[in-house]
Length: 313
Length: 313
Image (cartoon, rainbow over all chains, first blue to last red; front, side):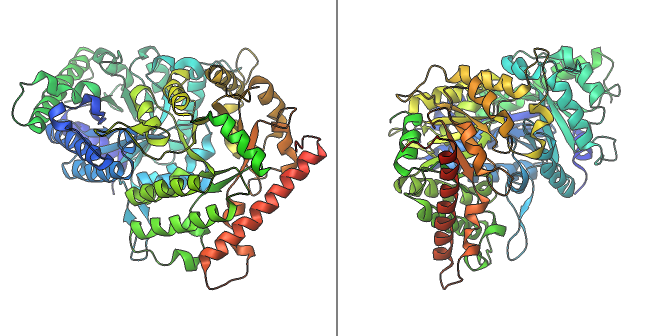
């Protein structure tokens, strides 16, 4: 498979969109008509799958990627994982890249097992088989560089991508990430250096690495530092909308060519159905709502690019 | 349900064992006769379940807890999670506490969904239902205190427990955890203070909190600092055996009464079958091997307690 960074940058170019749409099937966010009254975990997983498929169908062709949040599927047990696996296949079939947001972090053979689950293939008697088969995943760095290496190797082997938590979008992210070390650099800057080093050996044809970073839109004041420390890393930039991140700040996370970052929005798109007239079919309402809100988010992101002279097309 | 810390301390007392046995169904660690030649992920998950049930049956009654490693089940997709759910139920039925080692970390409603998956109950039309229903889980702190709060609340509500990564056992753990902040404290000490604060409001009758810490046996030089900063936290202490941690150092992680920590060992117990004569039944071989190696580990841990005057019974 082609290098993940090339695939993502090409998908951004072909859709002229910098948006990864979150797939967070929180029952509280679904139309009551679609959710129904699930009596079993399998029923609830089924509703989650229908909800997310409708969002995928609404945004396919107009954004480069979707970002299913693993927790919202895990809460339905095995049935939730089965739904997630089918959903990922459906999204890839629809031409979308899939970033499974799992924030895993562990050591040695355990991290290898996570790599198999999320990005790789399980060895079986008749040949290996995909498991979740996402295009990329998110990772937590607290255990250190040796914990990330098995995933970095797996990503390079399979043409997949990683986004390591560096400067996250939540209000309390500074508790640890802003701690200043004796050398004057804050913790997140040390993690940024680690990410740049881990990704230095696997660059795609367009100059970006398979090892990227999560960098919250809610802290635009750190964007320049992050871009400098990780010149070859793709940034996954969450926090647009309800968390307080502004489209106008997104260009700060791009390099001078207008490349190297993708914004993530979940709640705004998933609740787009609320802006649509109630009809007979709640699935169609979710699809139309996701499409309309994704188009609106695209427009606002493009506006920011035009205003900062980073519009590339 | 009774408070998790009381349940764990009582289980340690009744078994006179400080050992949590890891359940890491790595196919490479299983007897080839038991693994067979799995043709599907469901076959592989089935072998993982039989392997881990045999370990559970070998150690029930002689240790207080088991620690299934989520990654090794996730690698088999939905079938792996189904196997994990049955295995957790089997272990709890056998009187063991179950610490699901998942190292999750996320924010807001996402962390709530992880709490539901691992420790809580999913709301359904006919009443709520357990999902994994473990007694405790492990967490990663990189996103800050606000990311951990939803899990802390869920643990308190359900009588469950948490172990937050503080000072991990891997060689590279110091990359970030040993960074010294401007106040002279290293990162892991800041996390330790956070853990102590998060757990301060939910103490059990025996004086320990539902919010514990992961503190590697491979760094005994930090044990006294950790115990001082987190006087009411239970420590989950990995690294015994193959990783280089020594039984003789374990008492350093206990308080003066000989309480407050549990050692974790996985590979040594899971490969105990290699020390047993080959027979007709590989399951029975795994069971006997786990029992023998767990008894040996118990003996070595007890020896350390006797030598340091912390033997309580």
